[in-house]
Length: 537
Image (cartoon, rainbow, N blue to C red; front, side):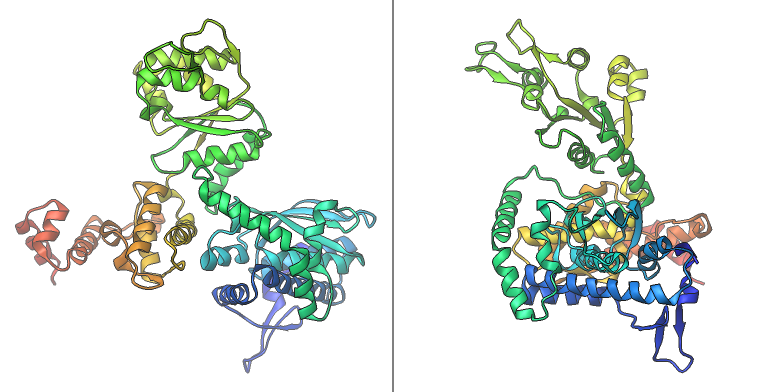
């Protein structure tokens, strides 16, 4: 038998009389993911992050070890390698996480693996109940991987999660190695895997050994809160966004110029920051300028710098953004609004890799990666002679299109929960939850302002919420009036049906006031009365 042959219909069994459920021959329980998330939250609130992580890591370790033992004797495996691979397959079948192994070594001398965890319930629940974390939060998953692999190889194997959606990364990623193969970075993780049976002694030891790390985390959290340039994590579980992130991750490894396009508010600057963080320039600065927001007379000085006395007010030499971003990345946002004269100078900088400050005769070499972003159709601007063709092709070595939010509906609720947590933290409130009706309205709305509009809507909801739950009344009126969105071809409805639903939504949003509803719909009151009359049987 092979790992991929495991099938949920064969593994899961319900006793006819009810009550007992078995999975792979062992009794299991069906638990709601949100309930497990609430349990995690209670552990963290009661014990603190360090102790809660210790408990959940050890729980995951014991679970992984037991599953490995059960699978070893319960199935006729084709080989030992198939048994080793079955752990990831089983976690996927159970709905805990979708595991994708990207690298594996089956050598008994140096066993190890690297993989990506998609749709981690643990990261999802942490974001839902606690907001974005500072460190990876898939503690039971890392514990499970460690326990399973340790049982398989008969030696201590430790899994460390170095990327996590719970802390704002695009995906969760884990690296699994033997204890001997890990370097000094294992020191802060190893205490969570030690096997003392006395919990009190264990927590006391963790408190002592990780006190320094706790102080570092608090310092980093304070720095993050005070730095407005630290971006929120990118959320991408929809196919459209996953393709965008995959392309961004691949092109980040090379120094090509990239053009990021998409509607206003889709998160082009955040994607640019993601590309910078994934590149070899991550240790260098990341600077951004909105070219449309700077007057034409000042844009050259902002980008290239100026010499003292070069114009009125130039009291000292000043480097521009190209020099300030040396060794890092410079984002030219709203590149389509750059005036023609500046387009020529930008093209020269991109070709020659050197700048000349305003008022100087000498050039200065710069080592900077340039990213450009726009919500305009630059190719149409080229055809209309509003944008230089040579600059367009120089910027568009690689083009990444960020999809609008209406094309990535799977990301709406994860983004909403992230924004709720962030807004609540800024306002000193407890992170609220969305009631089902409010969540449904978020999914139905088309979000013409994209992610930025969603963020503003959720901030408004946090301000207006009377309790720790966001209701439909806390959302902007236009969100509450949104008709049902068309998801698939089979769901396409007649225009008459859509009109009827839209009128009903407008009436609800207007509190039943027909005159106000007609005004919001842009039709006369008599027209509205006639349409309402037509709907009656």
